Picture (cartoon, rainbow, N blue to C red):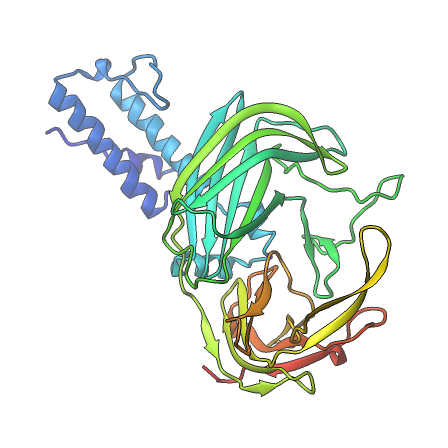
Length: 399
């Protein structure tokens, strides 16, 4: 078989091509030439089909060059983190690379087009309890001050939906170390003439991103290496929680989540003051903290008002102090880490072992953390939380 010309080396004179791109593109070239040889076609007979539709005939050398450039462009896009996950999780370059190397991150790069709108599943990030999904939306425009919305989303993992999830369009905001909403540059959010916060849903290239967070705290490793199916139906806007129709369409995606058990386990066996709770174990990943307590059951009676406005009382189980923040080894104190769905419950109906899961709003590797901060019970905390409002559990070298 005739050897394919090393077009990538020619292109590399102007473009630095990653090794993985080289391998995939060279494999594509070999297949093109094999097809030409096997079917006895001349160069001018080769038809390039990128989307199943017939394309204009062209010379294979030009086609191969186009494919090479397209491969560079496509893979560059695929390997680029989404804004909603890189900026949204306040991840450093080093942290992103670590998540790629560990297998927590999976680049998807799967696109679906309908009614002039292209949605791309960009990537997923998965640990033992959570998986983050990021989708990029091109071709759908909203007016100033409008909030984008999706009418219906269907998601299953390994054919099942026995998990919880939430989702929303990326608006360019994150939380600072005090838990206050700010821009990714740390600036206060701006308001319009009516005092409403201005959200920025449209990115510099005119696209938008939709981020989903799935979680299951009942089965460790639930999402790891499982097939996922996501179907998005109809795009519109949201006004006072009501969906306003915009563009009809259906966009469907299937891939394997990947993921990694990239955690450290600590066993401090530390009582939290006089709360009655003892922290037995903490499982910390770059995205979450699972805390296991010994916490004998107790009841709390609260005053409430029913749907008819009648006052009454509500009896529930008491809850242990929750992990809310961390102190880093560089001295930084982050008082508020909540980033999505989580919560706590007893392990069994007759057990005193209580499990509580915290979804962090940013990437934090266990090696960076000096201690975990648990919020003390209180009816009021004044004008913001201080370090005195927390129990502090030092990790030290407990593993």
